Length: 346
Length: 54
Image (cartoon, rainbow over all chains, first blue to last red; front, side, top):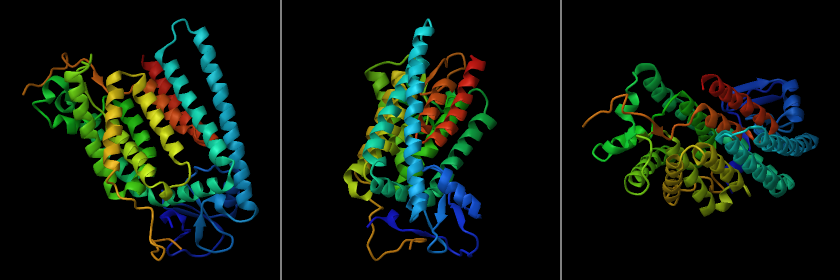
């Protein structure tokens, strides 16, 4: 038995019109029209649970609704995935054609092509391995439904952390912030605290915003699985990846730049830890969900490192490896005793 | 301990710009058509900022 296989009952629910519940926002809407819209026009990743027609106050992912409602969601999911694949192929073709039009193809076009290729490989493998088998997709949607109800704390925590360091860096500090707190290569050996501060600050607003968006996606599924370990893995993974990168730059391949900043080392560590956890305890996770995690790793590596600079890529790889080591000791919280009922579960 | 001056600090590794950041966001959104549109909106906005500022 896995913790996410139970249906969700909203505590203190008052019966009325059929309801939709957005757990991440704590929003309950009693509106039959909205429920109809979610079933017939929704998408699998819309973080909403729908009240079952059979049992008042019990909420499930829309794909798990019984009878024709679940069938409608499944048909729409298949159609959506085929549309996504078509859209990806058109975009890839356009990006390839642009290589002939642009005289000096920019790095950005190659990065885009690499991201699109990874997306096509992932979407087609996932379609053949999961979407075509309704029971596998239902299992994954049950897991998504549980993530919707469990990820709020972790997403809020990440927002708070980024808000504080963003406010500190962009609102309250002057231009010398990076020099004071970044991991500057030639002085970091004598000031090791810079591996901590450097792994929490960013080079600019674009870097901060991108890592915040990446972070929200990553903690939404790594947080509920790793629980108390999620923040230590993020923090420690960032510090280890920065320390290893410092050694790499000082003793193996020197960098053209003066220092290193960014929380993506810690985010890579969360992904590495999650991958190892999923390999160790395969039965605790939905079948083939590892494909999705691999896709996120690929996007993080390609866009966040592969075509930016080799030091960034090195830092991400060290973060991934540090996280993988920590993943060996992170407990599996998802398998539960048959007799134990978690809060909100029925 | 010696702090670097702004003139000495030329560049840092790890810093995503608006363009690569925009692509990362677009890539993350490529899960369903709806999330793809959402990711494209944010990602293309970031690419536009890059175009306007470079």
